[in-house]
Each structure stands twice: as C-alpha cells, then as structure tokens.
Length: 223
Image 1 (cartoon, one colour):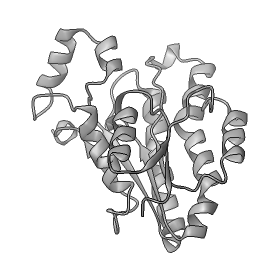
Image 2 (cartoon, rainbow, N blue to C red):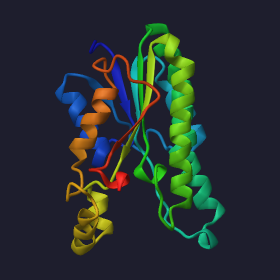
Image 3 (tube, rainbow, N blue to C red):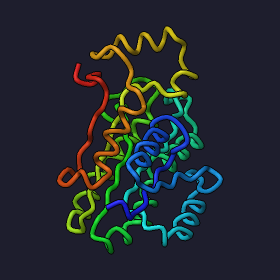
Image 4 (cartoon, one colour):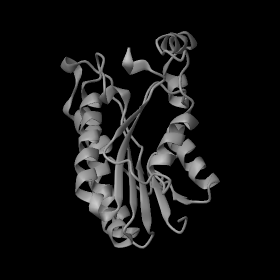
C-alpha cells in the first residue's frame, strides 16, 4: 500500500532522520518539513502547512519533533512551558486533526506519537517535558478509541536513552558511559533501533495494535 505519503516531523536528525530513512528504504514517499516549512511552535504555521498539503495523501503521520527544557520548578518560566506544550503536545494534536479526514476517506491511517521514558518515569528537572509526554500518550489512547472504526491505528513509541547527535553534544563521554551502566542491556539505543519500532507501528504491517505505549529502553524502566 505504498501509494500514500508519510509525514514525519523532526525528520532532519536523530530518531526522526532514522525513521525517514527507513520508510524511504522500503519505498515510501516521505515528507519531512523543515522548520521554515512548518514551525511547530507556531499554531499559525502548522495551520498553513495543513491547508497547503491537503492533496498530499498523508496516511501515516509520525509526530516525532519535541523539545526539552530542563529546569527545576522554581526556575521554569511561562515561555518555556508554553513552548513545550505547543511543540510536544498541541502541534501533534493539530496535525492529527488536520490530516484525519484524508485517512478516514481512505479507510486507513497510522499515527505514531513519539513519547519518552520521561512520560513513564521521571527525574528532577523534567517537569514540563514529563507533563507533555504524559499528555502525548493520553492523546494516543483517546484517539485510538475514536478512530478505530475508521481503520486508523494510533500508538505511542517511548524511546529510552538514545545515542543521537544531541545526546553526544549535551553529554560528555563519561556521562554517556554512566547512562549505559544504568541500562540493563548495557548501552544506549541506536536511532535506527527506535525507528524500527516506529516503522512497524506506522505501516500496514501493523494490523491490530492500537492505543499502546511501546517503551524501547533496553530495560531501563523495569528496574
């Protein structure tokens, strides 16, 4: 059923890029808009993208883009909170709402929302991020129920510690080694390993899984 397009947000690096590459390797046409083409922090920009792409036949939507401002509660400010809410939660909702009519018309759709282990467990400084990622899975569960009759399956993939460019940039080699020691499998995930889970849930290979949160974390959260 490769006659439809896949929309992936945040597809220029990390898990998003690995997901784009995997879909393309399997013959799908993928749209991964740049920030200039769609700024997820701006509801108006998202609306413009939706209105300008109604003819694209997006039947798979991967809401991958996200931001994480790490701050303790006393240091959080309204701008950071609002930006995380908009990018991590409200824009995915807006995109689903915008492209669901096309999926309903086709009687087929796959939506994969990228959550996080910090929406399953948490740690100090993750108030805003954990809040939005919990919200992402709430969105998944409700829409899975609403859209099941239309052949649209909605799921969450919650990645654990992943060895992306951003992880390498934000952490020293010793900090990354410590992360690995905390994971039962003894290493961080490769972006492609997360992408495989996203791809399965977000294609016609998935025929019966909906409303679920798949945690891909090497066993970190079961300890």
